[in-house]
Amino acid sequence: MAEATSKFTPRIFSGIQPSGGLTLGNYLGALKRFVEKQNEGIETIYCLVDLHAITVWQDPEKLRAQTREAAAGFLAAGIDPKRSILFNQSQVPGHAQLAWIFNCVARMGWMGRMTQWKDKTAGKNAEAESLGLFAYPSLMAADILLYHATHVPVGEDQKQHLELTRDIAAKFNHDYGVDFFPITEPVIEGAATRVMSLRDGSKKMSKSDPSDASRINLTDEADAISQKFRKAKTDPEPLPETLDGLKDRPEAKNLVNIYAALAEMTPEAVITEFGGKGFGTFKPALVDLAVAKLSPISTEMKRLMADPAEIDRILGDGAERADAIASPILRQAYDIVGMIRSRP
Ligand code: TYM
Image 1 (cartoon, rainbow, N blue to C red):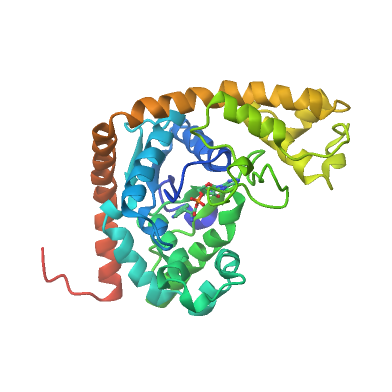
Image 2 (image 1 turned 90 degrees about the vertical axis):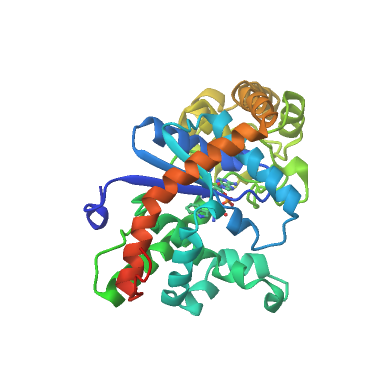
């Protein structure tokens, strides 16, 4: 445990936006690892960040459906609502409340330097984006620090946001002369911290990519998984004998990393097994592995989604347990900042 977080009890927090269906990137970079952390016996809190989702336009009915679908994805992937807290962000008011305080701690320049903000506004009129999209990382810092979370498992694309979370915690502690918020550690581990598009090895696999062929959705059935991997862009060379040989072959590297993460092997071990073999051999092996690992999840998701009332009950129970941790921390933060407790 790192020095800066040592006075805090180890606690994991992470979140996923319900702004579309979950992808293989979300699964390997985040969800699969959320389950591993839960099973290591650490306290784990997982959140469907619906307030983050509305930083860009969401149709209300679709947002509700996607939030339930994402919850089903968590449960189907192995999140146990008894051992982990699973809830949707909007139901614990402390997230928005602490985010406001952080909006007053963080600086505009910090937000403007976020690569995700720059990417999302590239070639567009940034003035026309929502204020929420600009302040997005401040709400993310609130998500984490509202629980005094010490560790946050994420994919690589969230690294900069977590550095900002540390900066916000440090500035709050410094400005108010307290040691109140932990300096949270990012946990970016495993073979697939950045899963790339199946159509373009230079782009991240994303739920917002217009091409469905670019991603595996957690709801995809065996046929779709097979089609997408078979059509995945590659090069004509066989797989190299050493990892080094993947350096300038982003599409091949991506498929090796996906295989490694699904099989719980290192990329080196995958290369030892498949080095010298062509994609005609490797892709069918990848399809078999992916179908074996993913189709039980999609089947279970369908079963769970047939009972939305049960999903809502699980989320409601999670929100109550989350709120019980968050409320006292928020009250203390208000005290530190100088708000009068005029109500009990
Ligand atoms: P989001 O919804 O974009 O993604 C959720 C998680 O999935 C990971 N991920 C990937 N990992 C590997 N390869 C990919 N192609 C890939 N695509 C997504 C992300 O890194 C992330 O871990 N801002 C966050 C949500 C958030 C959050 C938080 C996360 C809000 N508050 C507090 C952690 C803690 C986001 O948009 O993730």
